[in-house]
Image (cartoon, rainbow, N blue to C red):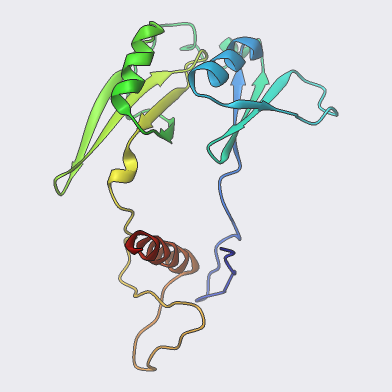
Length: 192
């Protein structure tokens, strides 16, 4: 399904489509490559040969991970070499997973430290597992899709190409419309 960009209201959001990649500084590209490939299942992909610095690109799950080697990373982050606590409220990258219990088992088999958390909303539970990559970046694996994505907005959904009564107030922004359109498409797909 291709989305059309439609200007709604006075302010228009940037014409974004999706998250492309996350770029991370690392002390050792080789150590980080093993982690992102072996632990998280990312696949190495070709990166431009014109780059004059050590790095690696990976792709899977619809997103890229770009590693950039900086052996002096400790000069910028004094916590990297310390056994820093795993804090679910810290900056992190989150990936949806199919089996949280299997994630915990495999992390234990690798001798990796992790912490767990449970989020509950309206009787629905989300299990979360947090751990660090070799450079101390926080990773979360979860079953977050258990909780539906519901935009916080008072506007009603206006499907493209359909008209509303002139009396209905319509003051939604572009993103509210895109989210509502995506949500309604998902609901249609689930119903069949």
